[in-house]
Image 1 (cartoon, one colour):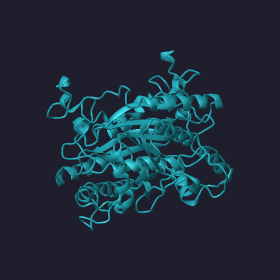
Image 2 (cartoon, chains in turn cyan, green):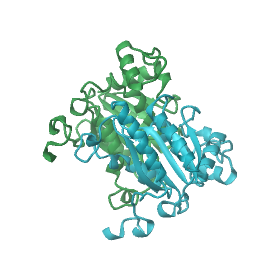
Image 3 (cartoon, helix red, strand yellow):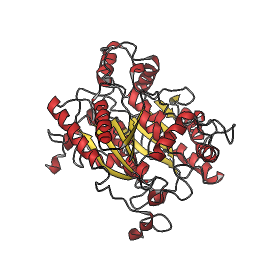
Image 4 (cartoon, one colour):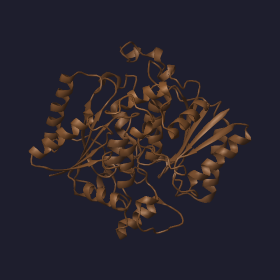
Length: 235
Length: 235
């Protein structure tokens, strides 16, 4: 299978970089073809805007969706973006590895989604959720947190991690048709001892080995919604 | 009062830019002092990393929190970041105006938070939530959505907007001690007619005029949590 690993951490000796290396090693040993988009190392530009397009439908006024649609028809995406789009479309499994910053994706990774999940190629025209253009693919988050597990719960001071990640699992992955493997979380990664960190790496390798078999997070498909896009059971 | 308006949209003639202009006009007429951080226009760099610091505690290995702590003590933040930190600390009300992209902040705005909400100056040492360094300030989101209100509900296909914005309201604003004014939302901004958009602008102006008086979103204070940082009522 083809795996795209999107890695977002500025420090090459960080624990998130160790997660990246373990993922490449593990998935390669399983016979998969692994491509790494190392966003900091590659100087990825996360700012969606005019630089996304080599040809414009309307050079005077920027509508990102309209330009994405136009670029999807004409092949007019900027080279960095076109490369990532190709990588995404080729992948059977997409893994994001990152530190949880301000309860979400680091900006460089959020901007990978903002730019690469382009109208036309990746969504639009009724292709969303269970009819999404990326259906058949799987996606998985691998993240580090600043605090321990029990504070990312419904009663914990930081709130429930499932709620915090809902915009990613549901709004990015499921919206485009990808099924999410449950996230791998290295709790308090910077504050635990070496043995715990080594255990995290082993646990992560195990999770990656079962990524194509694991039960995905469950979200309703389009047939669960009525014509106004509300759950049928609620109407 | 001092208001900091952080504006994130690439197109100067967009509806979000109209929201920005109406906010400046309205708040100025109310006698407030308004500063605009126009992130696209100013070429804001949203990528937290080595460029955040003019002097490093450890030039060989980047720990963002350690460098932020060091820069907070020594005044070692890069000029762009130092300017935004000063603006943030001077503000009584912080407004983010942006299009909801992939169910969250555009990367350029997420990276404003990643860089400006710095350990030392903005949080750390027990200063969080109701003891946050920014307590006494208010914050407000003003956003446009791609779809209509009823699809951003618990039964709607995109999920509940309150849940989608929890990482911002709770994880960014409340975490640093700021109380959130309920968000202003211009539903389906690109798909409604001119009269509806004009109505949105009037409604927004009204909401801004009451921003210092409105009942803020309610989140528990530190005294609601036990020593393990779980809600007392749950233990």
